[in-house]
Image (cartoon, rainbow, N blue to C red; front, side, top):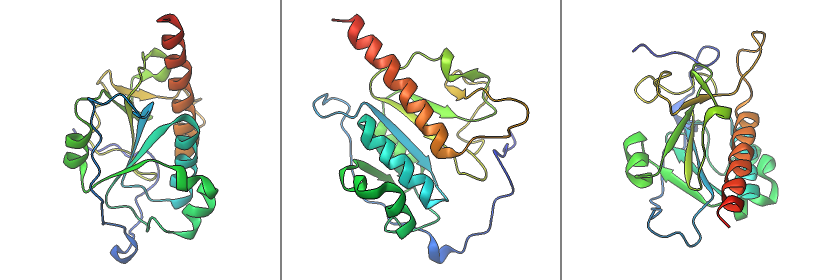
Length: 191
C-alpha cells in the first residue's frame, strides 16, 4: 500500500534539531494500580506546541503520552514548555526509539490509529480503559506500514469536504474526551 499523506508536503528538518534520545520506560499491563486511563502515541511529532498542548490534555484526563522517535524538536524546547505550561511536570511520559519498540512496550493493549483516511469514525468505536491512540506526524500522518485505512481500528473525526484535516492537538483532545465519556459510562454501568 502506498503512503497516503495527511497534509502538506513533508518539510526537510535538519537532524541537528531532532530529539532522538529515548528513555526506556516500561508500562506493565498486568498492574491496574496507577494505570493511565489511556495512552496517547505521537509518531515522530514535528510541532512542539502541539505536543505541549496534547501533554496538558493527557494530564487532565490521566493519560500517558508516548513519543516515538525521532521528534523534530528537543523535548526541553521552550515552545513545548510554554504550551504545556506548568502541567508538564505532572505528565506521565514514555519514549520509544522506533515503532517496534513502542509496540513491544505497550503490548497487549488495544490500539486505535487516527487518520483522515480511516473508514470508521470515533463514534463507531467502543473504547475501554487503557486504550492506545496513535497519531501521526503533522505533515504526513501515519506511514502505510502502520496505517491501513480499512482496519476497523483506524478511526477518523468526521469533517466537511472543506477541511482537509484538523489540528493534531484538537483531534487528540476530542478523541481523549470521547474516550473519557465512554469509559465513565462503562464504569457507571458496571457498578
